[in-house]
Image: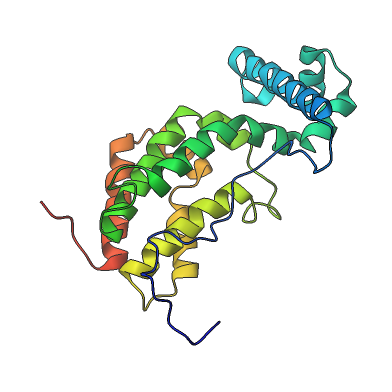
Amino acid sequence: MSAVPHPLPAPQEPVAHPELVQLGAALEGDEPCLRADAARNRARLLEAAGRLVAERGAEAVTMEAVAAEARVGKGTVFRRFGDRTGLLTALLDHSEKKFQASFLGGPPPLGPGAPPVERLRAFGCAMLRRSTEDLELQLAAEPCASRRFTNPARSVLRHHVVMLLRQAVPDADCELLSHALMGQLDPALIHHLTQQCGLPMARLEDAWTDLVDRVTGTAPTG
């Protein structure tokens, strides 16, 4: 790092946020027609997978089932998505990017312009509400243990929490603290608490706010 101070104020969001999952990116030098065909094939496969989710649930989405639904060879599905987790992650890609846009550039308090603690409170509550919309798909798309914490979409979310923690509690070990906070937003835990324990979402949101306030030593205003 350079010892010369930067003349501009630090941006509210870190520049080096990892990007969300990008599937089917065209290689430089590919012919436009080949890129267009690849995009159409990918869209066709995702449409087929979406129909399976709607008709039979996320558990019914296998590489073989999607290939049969789209009337293509199984190898085509593997080439496009790698494995079942990659396929399910691609199905979640649109909502992931929409949520990312809301906390990176949307209106406060979820987006920039509010104090970091207010943004942390809003972030967790928004994640909890979002999870209720596609919880089954999120659970089915959970990576294996060795890939769970390196998943690009999860990394975007956690790095955002780290950034807000560094603003709110700069003396804390924000990297490890972010993992603790993200644990309360884990889809498997949300499923257990809401579906198996019958807890209302409002209680989970209140618990998130309380956790943020205790970690940062603050209390809600107003």
